[in-house]
Amino acid sequence: MRTDTEVRIRGLRALVDALGTVEAERFITLVLREPFDYTSWQRHLWAGQSVEEISQAAMELRSAPPNKSMEPTR
Image (cartoon, rainbow, N blue to C red; front, top):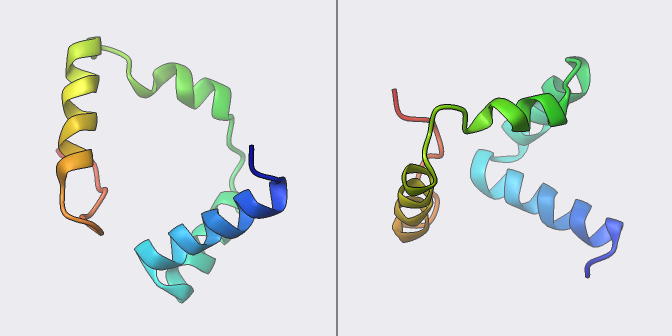
């Protein structure tokens, strides 16, 4: 298991790789500024989707080229 410090470093690197330095900092600011209930969000995240649909979406994301946008499809 990774230490808290290792998780923070890897998470920040992932944000910077995905968004760039400025937008990664902006994202962190947005998260800290707004109240956020992770438990409530998690409960509603996959509402209305079957296990098969979630699995298919995960497999598509995994097989996508690196740095593919992670924007939700509309």
